[in-house]
Length: 480
Image 1 (spheres, rainbow, N blue to C red):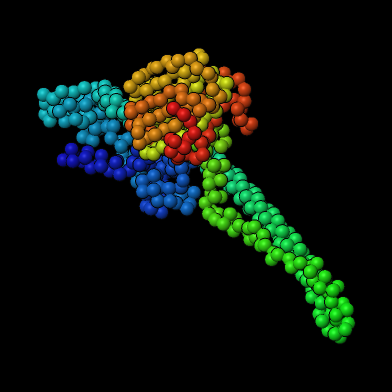
Image 2: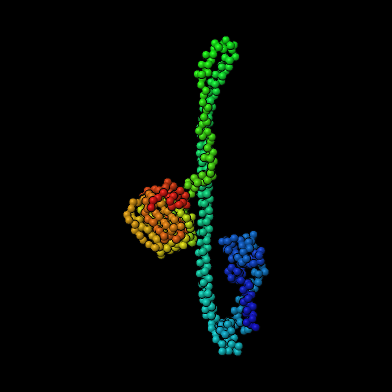
């Protein structure tokens, strides 16, 4: 019977515990969702989060919820009764021992009673200490998990801030690019209208000259016809007397040749209107669509320019450690991946004495030091020599060559070929070993810049296009 009473008391105590601190309620308050919490626990939670219930996540509109007076009185009565339980309810003696068989505190009189005959006892302080230690040990995994969650929460907060900064920066760049596009379209419109106006002026002036020449011929013909008609109206004697001069006038004014229409008299509408959208798009594509780098893959020490086309090595920055980012190898990937077709792009390396560029597969290792070159096909300049790296041939030192300012990368996924050119001269070719190149890759590490390569972002490697991203190998204008 006493065991049942203890169980009921324990169950009652569980119902009187705050869901946040797990202690008996102190100054409980009541939320609209009917859940109660210690006032101090709730206010601490609300200082960090929104005004929501920690249990059901229901949002509260009141920052100071009303006190739960009935629950407070119940908790005070429970605590008073629990304090009184430190004395034996049968003998009113202090509970100094703990019965290991019945698992309950007992007094000295209980120990000597028939009920606890042959039972084992320990001092209640020792049992409480051991139980506390056991509970503390059980609590450690929860504390460690909470610490891990705190770190994850910090990472989430940093990531959220980074996303906000990215959105602000992207919005700025989008507006900048659209201003650039509008300026490009305005300039293109004005240039095309000027060309149309110039051709119109030229053709109209040509027609005007033709009309003036024709008008002079018509005036001469009209004068000859009018004078001859006047002679024809004269009397016979007078007509015959003037016949010689009239006939001479007609013979002297030979009939002019029929005027020839001007060559290409009309406007060349096909030139001005034919494939207008396509031609403008092609010109815009060549002007505005270079290879773009993906900042979410960049090593924290790799700095990108505003247009995401130039890279250089700088101080390590605080950025989220997202799965796509290289955290050890100083690499940044291109934003557009390739799975088939032929592609080419150029990298302005300038006078930099150490650089690595090439292509990488999507599965390339991104975290920790690179244990292998799996998924990487690259060429580098190091200590004045060109070297290549690939899964099939980890390191290959190339014959001594001129140091080029610009490197052209030509990728043929259909044939599994990757070629590097400098000034239309083939430097190296990977053949029949390239499987897939979903991304482009570039690296700058440890190089000392010698001269600026771009006005807006100094001492960098700059990526560009060769007539667009996708083109046939035979269209690149390079020789094997």
